[in-house]
Amino acid sequence: MDNDKAMTKESKSLKLGIVLQPYSGSRSGPELAPGPQVLFEGLKETLDKLGVTPAVKDVIKLTPEEDKDYGVWHRVGMANRHLNRTVAKQVREGIFPLGLLANCNSLLGMLAGLQHSGPSRRPLTVGLIWLDAHGDFNTPETTLSGMLGGMPVAVAAGNCLFRLRLKAGLDPAIPTKNIIMMCVRDLDPLEEQRVMDSKITMVSTEEMVKLRPRMKDEFEKLADRVDVVYIHIDLDVLDGPDIPGHTFTVPGGPTPSELARALDHMMHHPKVGALGIASFPTPEETRAKSMASTLEVIKGGLAGLRDR
Image 1 (cartoon, one colour):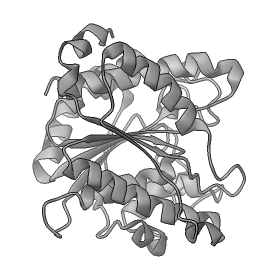
Image 2: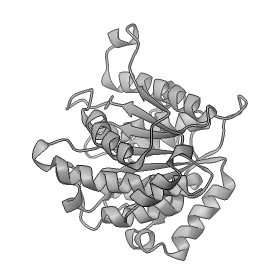
Image 3: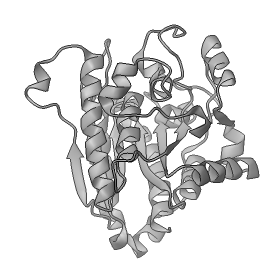
């Protein structure tokens, strides 16, 4: 997909905000992931070529007092609270937030920011488009790995880890009827049963790639019943060879151009309020390929946003 010419035509009217959220919540890796900053450096050059100057760039940081606290889950909860406030502020200022996220644990902050971005104290009703090879719908009782990164959708839906959700400011939880999962193709056995027992809508890779009527209809029905829609992309949603270096790739995903086309379609809708890109892989030997794939996807989204 070639979005460069389409973007430059009216790029001055595109008020884009960049938010870097590096806190990972990981107990086994670095707390501050390098992915958001690395991706920003590549994106900056692309935006320059497109003639898009971000209206604002925010980097999420704990306060000096918060930074004294221990516990990576606790700390990612506090970081998500800051992400919440940053996203809400950008939206109120008429800026579209693009989150460059350490991983999917930032989902809570992005959702909370949109939820509290309205003109009053009344929380907005938020719909979630979840683009990921995995459902991330495990709970501490069903998880096989124990990773927090396998639970954020369940946390957002109010199924577990309530304090973590409330710490991020996501209140109320997101009803599962307002969640659409696209391209999910790797679920743990008990996680799969949880998805089946929920009201989550599943859209296959083929339905998304080919923009099948069902995919479009489900998206429109979601947009009709919520105030705002958040689109979240974990880059392992892509087919493995297109995102080398990612730890959790699964065969059968869309290509970057296919995902960009679907994202272009969805981002045309005026209720889409923010886009998050999570888990950019940073190994140097594969970075160029992963960067090219990711930037193609983002350009698809920006083209849809510009054409509203």
